[in-house]
Amino acid sequence: MDCGTASHGALLAAAPLAGRRPRLLPLSPPPSTPSIQIRNRLYSMSLLPLRKARCMGRREASLASNYTQTSEFADLDWENLGFGLVQTDYMYTTKCGPDGNFDKGGMVPFGPIEMNPASGVLNYGQGLFEGLKAYRKTDGSILLFRPMENAMRMQTGAERMCMPAPPVEQFVDAVKQTVLANKRWVPPTGKGSLYIRPLLVGSGAVLGLAPAPEYTFLIFASPVGNYFKEGLAPINLIVEDKFHRATPGGTGGVKTIGNYASVLMAQKIAKEKGYSDVLYLDAVEKKYLEEVSSCNIFVVKGNVISTPAIKGTILPGITRKSIIDVALSKGFQVEERLVSVDELLDADEVFCTGTAVVVSPVGSITYQGKRIEYAGNQGVGAVSRQLYTSLTSVQMGQVEDPMGWTVQLN
Image 1 (cartoon, rainbow, N blue to C red):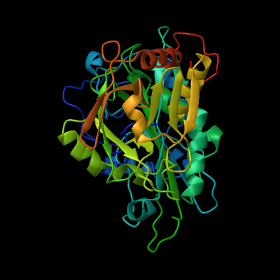
Image 2 (tube, helix red, strand yellow):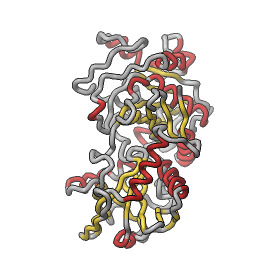
Image 3 (cartoon, one colour):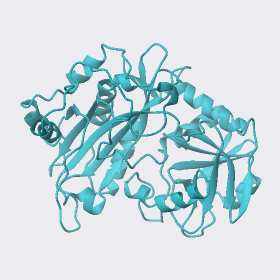
Image 4 (spheres, rainbow, N blue to C red):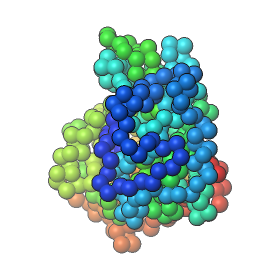
């Protein structure tokens, strides 16, 4: 699951970062500032089906293959890479009409997209997103981590939101194209990862509550470092018992865009008080753990690792699923069940999981004015460290992948 990564950069491009000096590759946008007419033409290309865009010079999968011939890195300060939007070169885009079938799609220059003010996503929030990562191995090859899981989760979310979704094969192929087209932005080994953001939005105009008549599926990417500036260091959470992230029968179990805007207020208040993030309780009993703003939560007691069960109000995180499998393979007992907030008082360790954070150990949790601290090796518990190391070693290709989770691109 992706920790707090949804907002800026999803539909509008941010300003270029200060000091960024990317070297141009073949097929990159021209170094001189294009005219307004040319820029409008480039941006409008993302709105056309592939058959129309070809006559305007759009390059599709062959564009990505050109990038496989170079190992050049973008000119970034890789030693101090944070978690935020860095504009890369290209994004993938395709559209789907009333027939429910997506065009083949292809790569276009990264930039703003045109959106009808009456679009379904802008008016009624009909949109989903995903998050996954690509890692560079020491031999220069690139690994994706479980992209099919993201594709299938998007299909589940699309069904809940009355949207068509691209087939699994098209989703995974589009992710591969996006990574290869932006290969020079994949950080050097051990310096970070390329965060990949697929989006599915109701782009067609609709006035009156109804599914949009047209949908856009696009993918952009950004190199990222640690989500929390502390890295693998303990974070401090506060339990929220007034605001709630999700309710039974709602959309808490799918990755719809509205789930993330609703947590911003509580998160803002928490950060103003010095906390890293918010831990939410269930909306009915108000005593069972659900999740952090955008991370799943785990509680460790002895050899038992407990995590809230997936019952429609918690996102089925892909990292959550992976950590459960890793923990079982290490001999831990894993329980998916109702986890009471009172269990935090007696826990040995607590940690969060998500695509952005991977594993984030919790140093303290404050609940109703009482602060519970969790000690460990330099503030990181032994179980949290073991699971983090085991999973990231697979993601980065440092050890064998017995589960078959990684996909090598080249």
